[in-house]
Image 1 (cartoon, chains in turn red, green):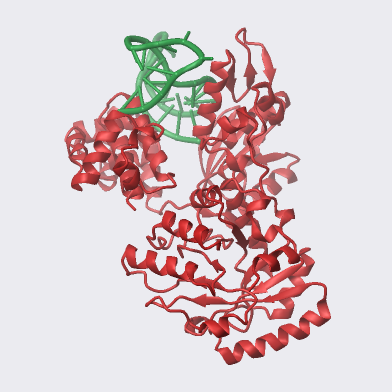
Image 2 (cartoon, chains in turn purple, cyan):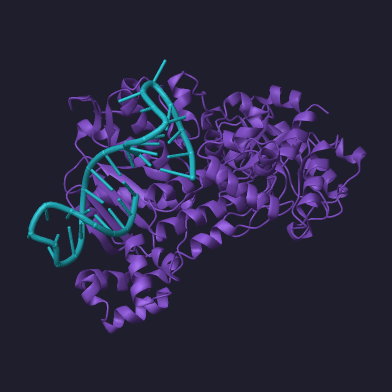
Length: 563
DNA sequence: GCCGTTTTCGGCCCGACTGTTTTCAGTCG
């Protein structure tokens, strides 16, 4: 699948077009098309072969022609053409906060600055003071020095705990702040933190938060600071009567906001962060999000869905799904114990699961060939089952299910034979090995695993580790089709660095009526909490409880996994 | 470059903050 490559090319076009000083709407158009293709839940090559490129949102004649060139010849002459118009170095300079297309163009063209290192030298020499002004030079110099610490996005637990730390600090100063932005939308990675407050002066308190390293800007309504960890925190202050509109605006996403504002315009109203207004400027709504949605004739859209992926259109016709909730989860079907690489024993895991209100817990220790994880042999599994039986007697009606995380070996064969696999209450297969295999081979392994009669679930299908390792380049539409044809289940793994399947594919899978299971993949009792993150992915993938196997009670799950 | 229950041309979300621009351009979210 070349979706990521094509999206990347279009994103480059967007940046180049901006740096070349072209009409800024061109750049926006490229970026929108890039997003469309990045989030496309089918193979772009398939769309192209079937002549459906023009059906994609934000793809018109111009962009379709470029995609056609790339997919048919493997070349992208349009990139080189545009590059010729951009002075060398401008793109790199634009990565710096405070340098936009204008400044980058000027610095690269007039001063021949080609890199951040060169910019640093020029700034230190003072030669740019006349051009940029004293303040700006100083600010940029600070930025250049800071830029050397790599920019990173936080995983959800880190983002949540930082947000909690900041809001506790504010609370100690008798100020309430509300977390918004991508954290409120439940995105798998969070770049910066966004808060809304209804108390004047909140910005002054934020600036005194102990982790603050520098102040990016500070005004009566908006304050932005940078923490020593490199994370940016933005705070905006509003009147209580504006709170709902403010939360909507700051929760985003940006593209969702644009669609919402356009919808307001089409109804002769105006929507901004202060409220919804009629054509005479009179306020119609703003105090709560519910009020604003309703005044626009929309159903309430849960934050997790606000990504401009059709949710506004769905809300207009009352088709927002009732998203799955964490309270509806009745059990966990992938956890590990001390039998393999877990830190807690089976009984502790079961007690912790019961304490969460679950009816059942599927213990899925690794199979034999995962030697690094102390994978179990047939003999050890039989011993484990005895232990499970006795705990089950004690804890009834709570039930521990005998599962396995079964290794799909490099050659596509499974760790155990069919006869033994039938003795488990269910089998989840995983592909951990063989990164360097071709996409075709990996796809074949995944498809044959999910098609195997002894396998019920494919765990974390791409095996990605966010920020550390790309997932296997498997053909996911093909995998989804195989799961559907064989009536099998795909997993959303709740480990914060996995969250695999990705939300885009989760949505596609359920559209094809493939059941999903949301698991914590816990390796300790505490990690059972990771279920929450998996549920967020499900919600971002528009799942209802009906789509999620483990929103069913024990009876329903056993029926579905009947062997 | 894309798009259309006002439009196939003329728009494209809307506002805060910074700096030294004495009225607004650049950048950002």
